[in-house]
Image (cartoon, rainbow, N blue to C red; front, side, top):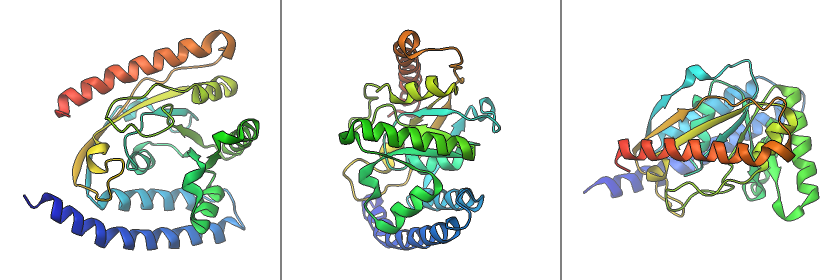
Length: 249
């Protein structure tokens, strides 16, 4: 009975404080990044930011398959997208340094946007066509120089019905072009914490399962792109259905 009122109180008290903390973190990144753009402190800040964000509702996490990740290897991480809480979950629990391909809409806050660009978050503007692809290619180049993996949502947006949306090809094209392995990651339960359109964060349980990496060395976009997309989408849908069944979601 008290779940919604308590969640509302917790949200409206902690979120403004967290936003203020985000601005402070952003300022530190921008100032420090002016002298050392690839500073290790950026990853430490992202880790702390993610941990605190997950504590707002709070979110309890179960993670499976971490042993499949080689921390010394770069990947194109392909994850499904259910909630804004997918972002801190991946930052917090994947044992690698990752950076996102993010829609231009998340770059609206000036200081935060500058900090995101400083740490290597890649801005995507689909309306710019070729210019957007050039920006992505440049972002991928910078990520490679800094040793970062790429964290991509092949669905392109959050699912509003709790089902996986059809996959776009961009993440897989990047993997083939760069020769990086695809690392499929399936998330379940974050939509119950933060539903698309809801302004309240609810306490809840979420889980993340890391699947076997898929090598792309020797693949070509002409011959292998479509089969790769179909394969990864099918594997992630199968695992997601199992996870939803186990959670009762």
